Image (cartoon, rainbow, N blue to C red):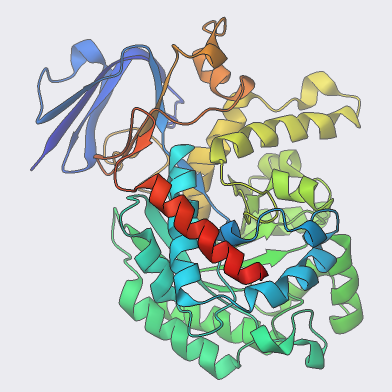
Length: 455
C-alpha cells in the first residue's frame, strides 16, 4: 500500500477534537488514510511520496455543502443581476430549460475545478432540472478527472405554474418519474462506505417547486436506502409568504409536516428561522448549509449563524449557485461568513461578545461541512480519517506581514487559490495548478456552451 509523508509545515491546523495547531507539523498516511499526525520530528522519516511543506499552512480540505454547478453557464445574466430570488428564478428558468447533457457535464467539470482551486476537497451539487435528456449520470461524468469527492443530488421539481408553483411547467417532472430515476441513481452511484468518492442525496428543490406529497415520498425513499435529504428552506421572506398562502404553514412547519427533520437532513440557507425553530432543529439533529454570498447577492437577509452554533445545530458552508454568487471560491465563502457575522453583530451593539473568530469560520468549512454531509471520515487531520488536506504558501504577497497568526491570516487576508491539495492521499492541485484538468480547454468549452443558452 502506498505511503505519504507530509513534513515541515509552518503550522498544521488539525481541526481535531482538541483543535491542535502543530508547529513544524506533518502527517503520515497509508493508502489514503492518516495513520499519524504530529511534529515532523515524531513522524516516520521516509515514505513512497514525501512532500516538504516548509513555509506553508496545512489544514483539512474544505467541504462545500450547497452548490448548483450547472449555473457556471449563466453567470451575470443582465436581467438577473439586480433582482431578488423569485424574479431571479423566473428569469433563469427558461434559460435552464435549454440545458443538454453536454451542458451539465462540462459545467460540472468547470465548477468542481474552480472549487478545487479554492481548497475544496468535497463538494455537494444540487441539480434539480433535467431537460432534454439530462441525467445524474452527466454530473458523474463531469466530475471524472477533477479528483475531489462528490456528493450528488438527484434533485427535482414537480409543482409547476399551472398547479400554483413557481417554475414553468416545461421544467417540472412527474413524481413517478422522479422517484424511479432517483432510485436508479442511488443504485448506480451511491457508495456508503468509508472514504467514498461518490454519494447520492435525495433533494427536491424547494417548497415552492415541489408538492407536499413529493416531499413525503422523497423522504421515504431516502430512508429506505439510507441516503441523506436536502432542500432549500426559508431562504427569503417571499418564500415564507408563499408557504403561508399556499399551505397555511411557515416553511419550517411545512418541512416538519412532511418528516423533513433529523440527522439525515440539511437545509440550504435557512435564513428566516425563529428561535423556537432553531431549538427544534438542534433537537432533531437537522443541519444547515450557510451561503452568505448568495444571501447578500439576492438580498435574502442574514442567516442566524451564531444562534445556530450556540444551539448546537450542525452548520456547514455553501458557495451556492454560480449564478447567485457568481463564483465557486469556498475559501472566499468562509471569509464572507466571518465578515457577515460581524456585520450582523454590529446591529446588536455587543461587538466584543459576538465577533466570529476566523477559526470558527474555518471550522464550519471543514468539520462543520463533514458533519452536515454525514461524513465521520472527513473534516479533520487525525489518525483514522481520510488524507484530505490543503496547503497555502505563506511566502505570498497577500500574507506579507501576517505571520503573527498564520492560520487566522488564511481568512483575514485576501482569499487566494490553494497551492497544494490532496484527496485520499492523491494530488489534486500542485503549485496552484490542477493535476487532472486542462483548464484552458475547459474554459473555452464552457464559454461556447454558455453562448448557446443565451442565443
